[in-house]
Structures are given as structure tokens and as C-alpha cells.
Image (cartoon, rainbow over all chains, first blue to last red):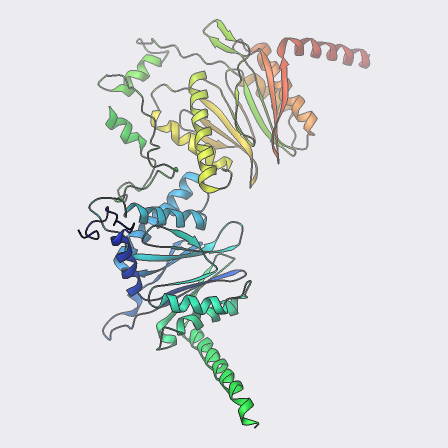
Length: 248
Length: 278
């Protein structure tokens, strides 16, 4: 008997195959990276190459849920659209009922709850997206959360989702330092994205949120400048490695 | 009838957008819908109820009695809450020892004026939801949110004869806060309120003695005195005064003071002052 035909059946060894297949769909999506610094959160996304006749501005991968919360996703864009809309409504609904903006954890939990519900209902399929939710709470500390198609939500110092996320996450684990300044956080995000984005600055989009709760999308020139700096550092590293042999 | 309750039960302004059926229900459990009650099996329950509880109408049959004095005010040292303790059913004094302050949690208080059952039921329900909020969000609920919860709870029953005039007050992240919430749907933030049939008497004494820079002892005395004067002159208020002080660490109970004993105490004080002045 095939246990992957229905969402609401467990396999004998405890898998919900449909949910796992949803994660596969996420792994096909473009990469997104989040880095939490001392007083900044950086979200970086890989922009798919825009076809010649396409208007680049219509492809948005980093979205605002409220003034102080950002979301980046990996996976099926249409599913993301639905979730983001519900999250945006919930942010306003929360402001109305409780007279306070949502905390990042609250909205993450809301999105995760929604994703989980769709793994336990007949006649539907799970959302094929993972999300990275970033922002600042009223305590002015930066926060970064991730949700998955299964409905799990977790908090992170730095994470990656989508294509080659495992590689990028390993890179982040090796190079992450606690309490990084803004510049270093941005550099780390770009550096880790460069592991998967071969074509460079024009296919990377970076959003930086600072503790004044303002979000800034970096201009292409700024990203290019940092990429150039990273390249230079790589060359210098390579030079240093060569040096000992040259003095022989 | 259920459709009527449904119509008034929607607290979310975006119910057209609510395709996934998730909004207006931010409680921990999704089945925490409004408790449902029996509604008169009349053609139009609202106008039926309105007729029957309105003193001026010819159909006046349900006499809802509410006599009370409650007050609360903000000052430099926090918030003072003072209430009387008499419950009346028409001309009959039901009890002289009613607790008209409900301790929602160690830093949130609610006062009760109006229908005793309405107040105590809904404020207990508020207490339950505040606790659920704390568990879900791992932080205390703000006074603004708690008062809004209560206001939204009773709004669907507007016009159906609920009688509740309450003050929700406490100390939260943004400092001391005081809100007045009633069964007509009002929710007002303020620094000084008095609610109930004896409120006019209390306001007189309260307003003339109030200053923001009162000390805690002076403020407690002012609250006690205001309730005493209302209890003295208003037939529907009396029994004893219950005093509370809300400060940064929560609320503290400052005792039960019998109104009759207070009368003689103040008489003696007056005599002393007169003797001193002479």
C-alpha cells in the first residue's frame, strides 16, 4: 500500500510522506539566508535570473508583514502569497485586539500553526514553503525564526532555506560569530549566498533591518561593492597560502 | 437565533478575507468561541429584551437592580482602588459583605458595578483568558489588552440586558493603567473613575481631595473617605470599604473597613479638629 497518496495517513515507520515531499519542493526553491547580528538582522535571497522580457520588479522575495517584521521564503511562490496575506491580516488583527504590534515569535507561531493545520486536514495539501521571519521586538533585540511545511518553528542565529541550504548552513556554522556588527553580518550573508549563486551581485537581494525597525534593501552597487571586497579577501587568502613556498 | 449571535460575534474586521478561517480567534485553543446562551424565542429578541428591562416601557417586567459605589484613580504612587460591599435586591439588602473587586491575577484587578452575576461571570471569564494569554505568549497580558478582551466579550450582548460597569486596572510594561469598560460597549482609558449608583457622591469627595502628588497613605485615605461618603448617603451602597493599592510589584490589599465604624471615627476626628481650632 502506498502511504504517500494521502496526507492524513502515517506510514508504518512513522512518516507523513506528503509533508516530506513538501520539503522537497522547498529544496527546489531559490536560496534564502538569514543572519542575526548584534543589533541587526539581514535577510538575503537568491534572485532567479530574470528572463529578458520579464519586468524584474514584479518578483519580490522579501516581504514586509508589518512595519517591524520581514519574511523571506523558499518554495512555491503562490503558496507563499497566501500565507503572507494571512500573516499580514493577523498582524493588524493583533494590533486591534491587543493594542500592541505582534512579537516576532507570535507571528512565527501563527504561520507555523497555519502550516501545521494543512498537514492534518482532509482534502488539502501542505504549503510548499519554508519561511525565514526576521525583525525586532519591543525589547529591541533582533530575532530570526524559521518555519517549515510540517509546521515546526524554530529560532536561529543564522540559517538558510531552499536550494543548497545544507551547504550554506554548513558555511554559516563555520563562519558565524556572535554579536557581529552590521557590516560583518551583511558580509556573512552575501558570502554564504555566493556559495550557491554563481553569477554574483546582480542575482542577490539583501534586506537589512536595524533596531530602529527600519528595513533597507541594499542597492545593487552596494552589494557589488561588498562582493568585490569579498573577492579581494579571497585573493589575499590565496596569496598568503602561496607565500611560504615562494620564499623557499 | 444562533445566526443573530453569529452576526454580532465577529470581532475580526476582515471576515471576508478569512478564507482559511483563522482570524478573531487568537486564543490558544481554536474552539474558544463565545459561550452560547439561550436567547428568548421571540421574533426579535433584542427589542423584546429591551422592552422588558426598560423601566419606562409598559412591558416592564424584569427589574434589574444595581447599587454600588466603586472608584479607582491614578497618582504618583500607582493606583488606588476602593469599593463598597453592599448587594441590594430592590429594597432588600442581600448582603453587606460582597467582594466587588476581582483579583484577576497578582497585578490585575477588576471592579464590579451593576448586575452582580454579570460582573462576576464575565470577569472570571476574563481571568481565564488572561491566564491563557500568559501561557501562550510567555508574558503577562497588558491592561489595554485585558480591558479590550472584556469589552469584546460583552459587545455581542449589547442591548440584551447585560448590566456591567467595571474598571480594569493594573501595572504593566507601560506603567500603571486604568480602563473603564461597560456593557454598553464603552472602553475608556482614564486617570480617575467612579462607577455605580453612589458614584456622584464619591466624585464629590474624590475630585475635591485629589492631587497627583498624594502620598500612598493620603491616597488610600482619600479612596476610603470617598466610598464612605457615598455609602453614607446612597441607599444602595454600604457595608464596608475594601481598599487596594496597585504598585510596580502588583496589588496589595489594604483591608476591609466597616462603614458604620468609619462614621464614628470621622465624627471623632471632626470633634478633635473643632476642639483644636477653638
